[in-house]
Length: 255
Ligand SMILES: [Zn+2]
Image (tube, rainbow, N blue to C red):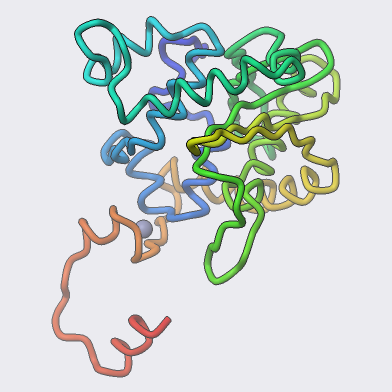
């Protein structure tokens, strides 16, 4: 199967960074998503990010076609999405940000990690760098599973960095630095350009290489996926088998 802009998001044997992250989160949900059986509800936040991405990577018309509900009759964005416009203007008036956005846009790369076919879609591929654009609420630390994390690790951008740098290395034979260009959706949008260091990419690579064969085997239905029990998919598809003993109940709710 040859990947194109049209079929990139269709179910395929290729593992992407976001699919890998979904499997880390919940195998059962990720499998259902991979097969198109469960569709994650597109949140306002996700669509806002996609709009900013589309604006800078030249796909605004395509985006408009997919999301006509976001626009008013005069073609202006609806109020909920006007934060996107402030974020875009913020980036546009920073020459360094604009310089880092220069390059080929939405470049599809493929390769293999531990023998598993993998894919990535790069926002920007410059001659000497890979840049990914992120639109987020703010730059505050994120609390995840009781841990206080920086946004790069909290959202798994280190895993994405590993996928992208590794696939570019395989396809083009070069090791390029990976940068996150992040903008906030605050009333006064903040801006940040961060280089993901090799040590962080390497440690994310260890996690990827440790789990990827298992996740691939789950996609091939060779292994049963584990249910996390906490995500929307697990809640929706849970089946009661009978009453639960009190000690087991305590174990579950007091985690
Ligand atoms: Zn789950």
